[in-house]
Image (cartoon, rainbow, N blue to C red; front, top):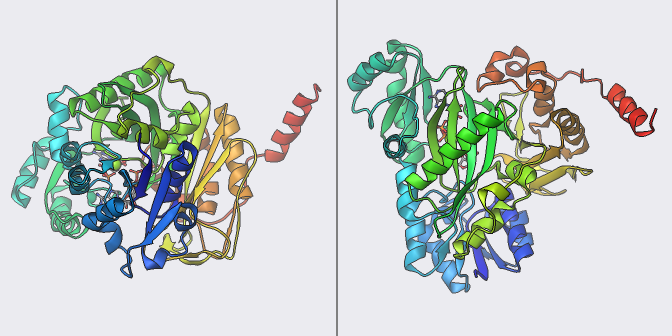
Length: 472
Ligand code: ADP
Ligand code: ADP
Ligand code: MG
């Protein structure tokens, strides 16, 4: 069994991993750039070591991180998400130095990190894949020819892209010609590789992803799906489990597809298979994320399974202690990404000091955050500073609870996305559980956002609930 883990990350996910370690009696080791000296993960971990003055270089230096893991007597390393979490070299260096990497094998990371190789693998395994180019496109003329074949609109994507970057929808040949160089240079800058490929643009796309767990003994199971269709510029804002847009029959089909996808690439540890669902309810494999995901807590909320603890057990070589049939879900859960951004000013990052922070509470509420009163959010990193996760037995109960919890939490001193989430909750289509990835763009009040008061009649709901409780 793993006894001591180096957490090669920062922010809320590092805190999340410390918490899993603490419950399992595992010693946790944090690392920090000097800009993160006052970070919550540094305070919460059992030990913490400086990576020096560079703001991000330390978190991206695989050799240095593994050296530190060895020097501090760790037997494992957890990469979190972002940074080096999908870097096959980190997994290789860990393996060479006798440190267990808490994630899949380097070769699987490499294969799935290349979106065209991932698509090829899935196609060969009989998994439906978004129609598109076979392999990467070689030139703009090649792209134009393939796009004519697929039919517009098409998605032009960076082969090693992630985090919603390096993706452009092209509605015509002129559009494709305009965007081509831009996507390539974005891919080069953000991911260090210039390869791009084409996919058919899926109409009315719903983003539905499945959480997978796979041990080293051949057991692969899924923990149901998450609906991440509520996005802005291809970045997730709100995630929901289970999807209110699936029937139980579709859910079972999708779960099977995801398990087959994981088996097809020899997957181990926790992973996520992302699918798009079109207007005709067809599923297409989009990509696989070979790491813990930001939105994993909504799955934990409906299944009661601690995914980080399972990751650690799997990496220790233990068998999964439950079968597919034993995984049950209960109720609905929703996660709100609370970013230090100004939704009234084009989501401009709003870094600075948290003058006051009130954690929300009450039934069915969880916060995974990296903030506290007096904390100064450094300007060098991701603007997501907390996640609010709410759970309820019913969909309607969840909407009420989400509304309450978003008013219950208090983050002062910086602008946040909280009021924007409240605005989304006011939307009737959202409340009805019907939305695709174009939801935000389709609603002028969300694109040209302004604050208005709630239209949901919460006072009447409270009175009705009280009356029901008192047997009136
Ligand atoms: P998730 O897929 O877990 O929902 P995101 O797609 O939002 O999460 O990515 C999580 C974090 O990882 C973000 O900070 C994002 O910028 C970063 N990230 C994701 N993929 C990459 C990548 N290929 N290269 C660099 N950073 C990435
Ligand atoms: P990333 O690696 O950045 O997460 P993805 O390939 O997962 O990139 O795509 C991110 C988002 O872009 C999806 O959740 C979806 O909203 C949109 N998208 C991607 N591919 C398509 C497509 N073929 N048709 C329609 N929307 C797409
Ligand atoms: Mg994705």
